[in-house]
Length: 632
Ligand code: ADP
Ligand code: MG
Image 1 (spheres, rainbow, N blue to C red):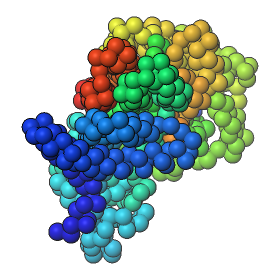
Image 2: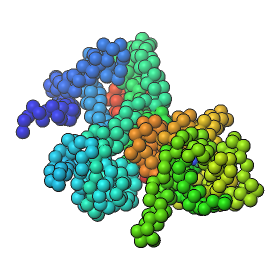
Image 3: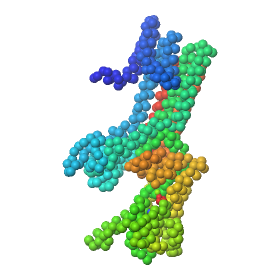
Image 4: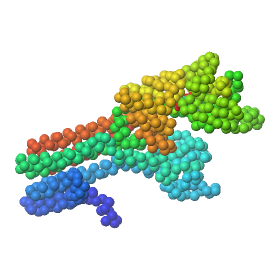
């Protein structure tokens, strides 16, 4: 093997080991023989071998006008040699080098918690061109190309399934341990594992433009970003280090005890204090990422540890967000006419209610084709409206063939001076009390029917709300839906409080009000419709973020899967992280006070001081790393 390469790669380990051997050698010669000069020379060499890098780093930081730990250690080592304390000098340098080496190793391990994710993405992909298959490097696949994925293979690109059906283990991206069923039209992500069936997908994201890469990139950014506590501690240590030097000089003037002054320099370093919190945060962010929760930085993590109110959007968050038509009622119009007019008005809307209407029309058409054995009653697609106007939080106003069509809720009707009959109102009330969402369809000011929609409540909603409540967190549901529907859903999931008939900006205002009342507020919603409220909350949590770049970009925390269980997990992890940070600060401060007392009372000298100091640095690192193992 190339020795030079080996040396470069293992420089730190080699220097640490060499310093250690020289130190032990010098020390044992001095201890067992009378060859004091030889012992001294070897110890000085040990100091130089280990101290060279430290002195160099010290020189670099001094150039930037900052005094760091390296400078303190350098002064201490040189000072010790000057007063003939060779053993002390070598010991300090060796312990410091060893500490640094271990610190570097463990830190790398912490930061690389995500390395496994990166290794998930395969290097090769099989693409299909005009019926021919070819294996090419995965990052050379272009968007829109067809990629073949065999059972058991890792998926090389983000894509949409065009053929085949399978189960996919999405744990690397979403943290879900249960494999997900995937069929035509579904999305798959690079780095996940195809299990049972062969798949043909159209690539939608390749190379560095995949969900998994974006997650890794965001996690790295998040790990770099400084939390308020970290910033505070760093600012503190900027003043702290020079004051230790002053204390050391003062001690020398008063006591003329050089060794004690040098010892003060070494033990006064704020090493554990500065290194502790970042380890806690980096570990925690790594743990979260592996469990499908993207934390956007220590700042949010520290905030999330203080959350005492969680506001949920109803649609798509507490409910599945798969709105389906439950019932159509015509008033002197047939059901299919009501559906058809609703379809015309909703044709160009992107609202989830519109999707449900158009979906139903598609279904009905298929049914007709099947049952009538080829006799298709209505072949034509739904026509476009001549004009349409979206009334946010209320509905749609459209015109078609000279007719004025309204589809929407009570407030839309009121605004347009349309009043439903008592019978209609009582029918609507009955359906709403079941938790359904009901909209009116009117033509030229006359109600022709109502459509009731149902959006199933997620199975986990009740459990999760209960879990949050039992850990003392207030739960609130916000929705644009009407009061009866909202009340029914709120009751079913057991939420503390709900607010209904809200326009998007009203949701935002409510979040603001809660914050003004002193709550630390988390808002859970989808990253797109609920973006304003997510931004207003102390911590904005986006659900089902895999595949939606905006959610990954804008939320403070993004849950890759649509899994509510991640919310209490994320909050509890944040709480544990805060606790861990304080433990680390505690360990660091206790050590400093303990050492200072020890030194000033002459119980602790240079080498022992360094040993305890390095011990405290390793202790906070190991304590922080416990968060890597935190379980859901
Ligand atoms: P949410 O996301 O909670 O459903 P929205 O603000 O999107 O809230 O909608 C609130 C209410 O406004 C809906 O429950 C419905 O009554 C009415 N509405 C909004 N958009 C439409 C639409 N395109 N068609 C029919 N009704 C609509
Ligand atoms: Mg919504």
